[in-house]
Length: 117
Image 1 (cartoon, rainbow, N blue to C red):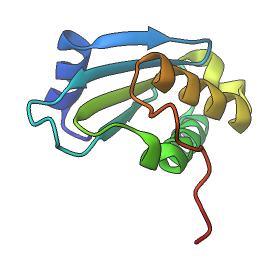
Image 2 (image 1 turned 180 degrees about the vertical axis):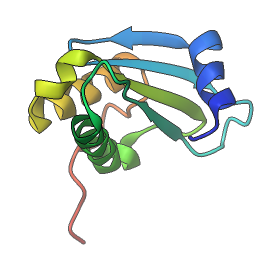
Image 3 (image 1 turned 45 degrees about the vertical axis):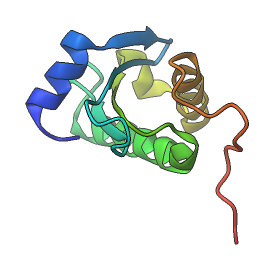
């Protein structure tokens, strides 16, 4: 997701779950079979440009690895909290997985790793 109106729709109409490093907002899309869309929000409170970009790259990668396990038809916004600046990748990845599961957006029987087929 890139459009400001999409982020606002998730924030105003959606639900939210939070963890130590991240907050996840999500809302159902009007088209139920539309692909899942994910947006990332990392404010200046997290740190300077280098740190913000590092956090965004880590979040993108963690979502990319579990994209095949996520339900279609949702808009999701992952917002980094200031504590995310010092978090290792594994902590961000596990919290992302946990928040998506708490929101009910992950298939419970799917594996987290991408197969090498």
